[in-house]
Image (cartoon, rainbow, N blue to C red; front, top):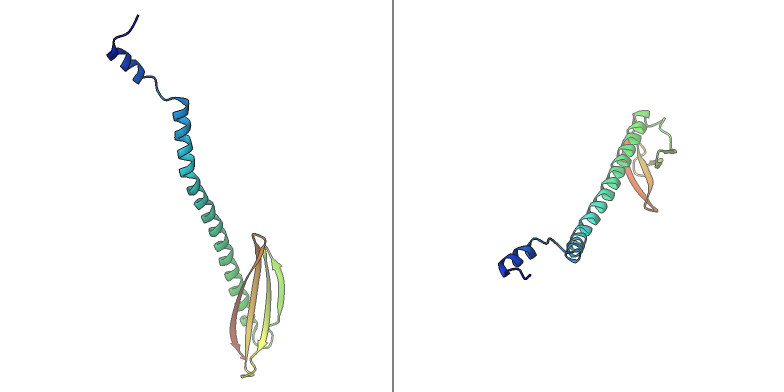
Length: 127
């Protein structure tokens, strides 16, 4: 028995989506979402690295302040490892002014197989 055209048209419109149509939609969504996921991953890595740089800056600042607090005559060069950071504190006399010395702090750490380094310096006068 053959169905009238308007009934056959209604039955065809209620069939839903075919497997090929669904796969095409998922492929388009995957291609659209992949760059967003890549951007998110890169942003998380950069945030992590900036946090490390901030921690290294704070460590260098604390070491400079500790050397300044020890005084001109008693401050000593130092080097050690703390957590993921290696640091070196150097005291360099100022050749132009014998009453000044420079406190140099270098902090280094590993990031993605490469060594990153931050150096801070401050002058200190004798007391």
